Image (spheres, rainbow, N blue to C red):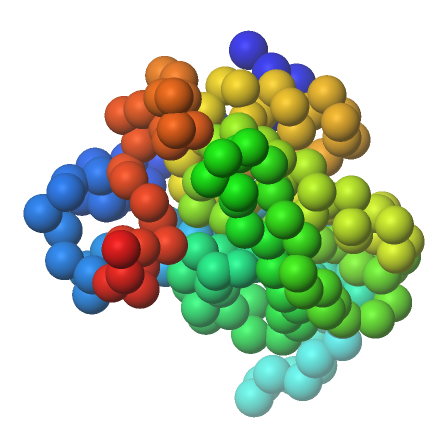
Length: 210
């Protein structure tokens, strides 16, 4: 349906996503599920990373294994909900650096407001994973990727748990070179810009706020 969009249909991801959508899922369980889904998504989103030979001494003899080539991965959660995806990926890739982009959505205009930006150095050499559980209107996602590109980032992937077609379209219209990974492409947005059927406000459900 969209170029550069990957919908991750792994049975474990879909099973956990169903539990995540349930309005009765407690905050503690919601956090755990977001982390678990993020880890599984990262496994899929990193399967094409380049490798290089690496000599190693086993207990028996020297041999040559393989390791990921180039600079390490950088995770950039969009504050605040994106924080919920970091720990799951760090468990899989402990060497990943972590930056932060602060954006919030104006409830009247539904457009993003930028308030914080801090990322690891060597931007041109790193692969950046921008993290946000929801890709709704696409405004925050587009602005986050634009901010990364402005400082020299050239390899960027966007990971979200649930996406709306409007958000994916907006992202790929502005940044056709960015790959988007999601566990679900939901039906539409409501008048307030929330994804339907969605899973509610991910930030509020992660942190127990209203």
